[in-house]
Length: 295
Image 1 (cartoon, helix red, strand yellow):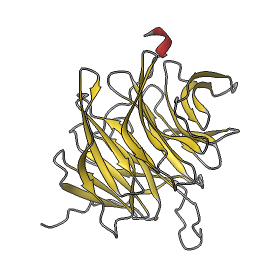
Image 2 (tube, one colour; image 1 turned 120 degrees about the vertical axis):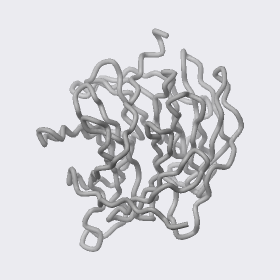
Image 3 (tube, rainbow, N blue to C red; image 1 turned 135 degrees about the horizontal axis):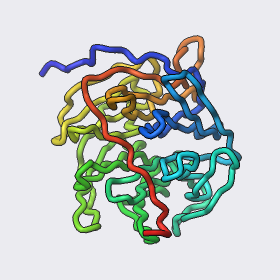
């Protein structure tokens, strides 16, 4: 089988030099993209039409910043737990911390599913011990699933709410879980990374139900069909590719976060920047979180 290569190369959208850029999310209400720098804790927000970019430094590591009903308040996954964070004032309203939160863990990826639940992961901040896992939080109830991992990514839920994809980054494995009547099924293998692919990092699902996976250390993004076969590869001109999200007026622009982490900017000049590339595929609008205390 001939591997299909995407015809366009990602370009620099914002030269932000993030140490560990992650968790891009498009807000169709304001036509802005939000993402985070985990290791130089900052929330970034970019408005492509005007070219304006804002950033909001934080005082502890955070893994994600998701949409809420208030465009100026994000659902943020800090090292210490999940909070509602008002960007301008910095005011935090604590929501939940995993009961099994290990002292060396931090929150990593987060995603609001079509059911309105928050799906998020925890991981060993040292990226060594399998002390992390995946969680679903909805209506004040917190459930763990997916077993123990050292470095977690995803989780992401399909538009019909029937599947959850997760990445065991350290082991190079993507798994899929079924969902039925709020019950998450056991993990099933979906894709295993080959040795020269790097490691599976951020995940996103498009409108056709295909899974896009960023290759940390692999300079690419892969689109998998629902059966786990590769549909296309998007080459990325930097090594540490961390997360992608669809945005733009018709949700066909793929925005890509990357990491500077340990890279030489002279040898890898696009490392850490926010990138963008046009596609012929539509993504899904990001779901908006509604405070669990009102559900």
